[in-house]
Length: 574
Image 1 (cartoon, rainbow, N blue to C red):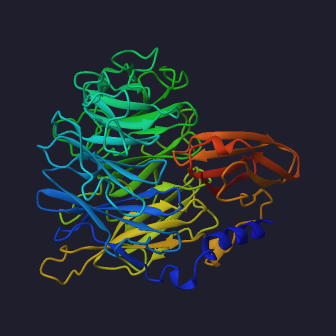
Image 2: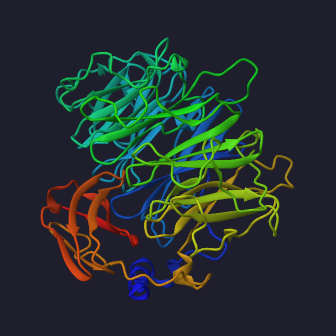
Image 3: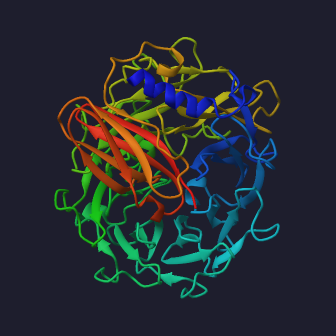
């Protein structure tokens, strides 16, 4: 049965396009971060409702940052009208790293950017349509806030537009480049006077904001779609920690996504305790889970859950696992390797984890982590993404395993042990060697991964000038025969029908025994939108008859039982 299901997945992934559109063995050139910049800073992946990917490619200049965007299909085709080098969208002046900018996809497939264009122009919104056109006309830079600050901004999708947040203010913008109805021209105050902020949708057309006020501990605030603070939430937001050590907490320059959804109606926030004089990394990293009603999860410590004790670390990354928890990853600058912890919604850590986490590279590996542009600093995040089974797909630059100076991709289970269906040492990305540096990895939703890397000529006088970004897709080894398949399992989830769907959507679920299983429909943020319980061995027909009432876009269907997890992509259309 598992072989049959995998064959269906493979057909969906590969047979829908011509063979000439398949990913080349050595990867595919997908664009340049920014002309004449000295290397790339990283790549962000965004899932579009069509199933395509939008790639945001950042370039590093002397005292600035530029970025471009490319749209590409799962089979490696550029979208119609998109140039081979991508679409250049902007250049920033001043020391403004990319994780101080928010990039999100709205319900129409438009990509939104919220952030600084310079340290003197204030906050703006930008918008790119699915066809590659800037909106409106040839310029999509809209003044969002007239106030000027040099702090980070963030963005979250909203029906018909997006939320943009900076410092103490939030604005809801429409695709016409104007504030949404009922929203003043300069947005509204969140009640959190903070330098570092992050925002996500609340699942009810509003937004949840995380802020780190100076002189206080971290706070969260909920704003409704009508520009009013949610009833019952304090004017200054909900206090996330009562621990004095969290006063003046900071995201640092590493925590690029410090706020993630944690199942329906809950969120997990992350922060670093203040730097100590003479240290070169965040002192500690702490987490807190809070609910949509403005209360803390009583199972979590009121002072926050200590995730990383005092250590010298960088590149702290928080990724939702799709099951209500999150993967917390970081570079350990003392041990010169990459560690992680999988925190569950219960506030417990998965697996046999010590206080300093679990090493993610393969045994015997020596990862080199100074790979950000030409400056030789660590990347601002760990290249990794959640796998459909609640585990992790993780990539790194390796200096020890043969062949040396390679890029490897490794699949890990929920407890960060090696996935038995993949090579324990990881799979190689080619070409590798001097001039090739990892830039990002992204789950394809069905067990494989997209991988992006920087390619440059190390023999040039300025080897980092005019850097190119290349990319490939690795299907699960079980589809390719790269590695022996794990033992056959009888838990199965069929392809959805119809797909795309304009209304009801149906799946066939096969259970191996009489233990119950849960079938769920999740949005791309990992929030459960629909759920049903099934039990009894054999085949079951599951229909979500009201799926058409959900916003159009990309979703995931998932069945979970004690036998494991299976998932499928679903596209809801109008």
